[in-house]
Length: 70
Image 1: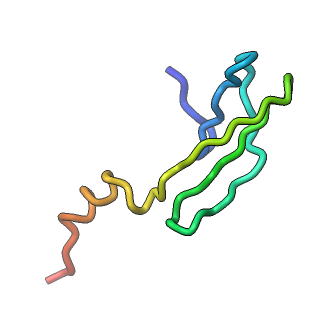
Image 2: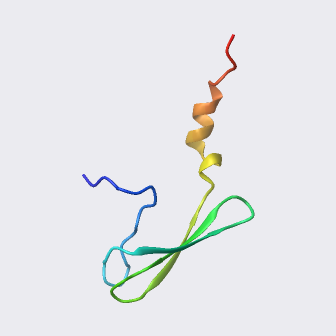
């Protein structure tokens, strides 16, 4: 089992399977992010879109049961 050491998972290069490096994060108006990963071995760049984590389904499930103290 592989446990990531960072909060941003570094995907493998689709060309040479080397672990990519996060080159830049571009915030988008809807709260999501565009992440650019570059391969240090073959210089291939990949762009991934990531939804706003605060609008995820998991956060919504957790906050359904949150109520102010009585």
